Length: 171
Image (cartoon, rainbow, N blue to C red; front, side, top):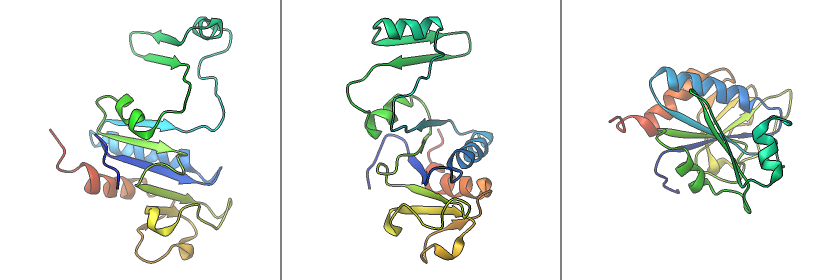
């Protein structure tokens, strides 16, 4: 298992399986408990994070290698890169977070929680040995020995993450 500066938990599953909803629930649960959670969403294609036509978008389109947006409550950097960032680089970019939750990194990260929703599929994308837990409404497909939770069991999954990776790391 790869060791990073902070724990990394990846939420994986097929498209439209409910990964983002699961992420939102886990983030809310962990932050309510006082943990600082950083997140990263993996996209296969280029995405426009900045609003087309706005100043910083125009700066980037004109050739700026790093277009920064700063306000009293937010700071964002949109940076052109030659290669996709590694998970280790993303952990470093997470700053002073206690945990990095990733969404959509199907081939990165050793700690995976798979989301399987019957309306989308009744198959998993991960091998059993790759799984930390599964959130599903199809529990009969999960191999023995893997923790299984309902799709809306955000609190229980947050407890598992907290007990496995965060307890004992409080300052």
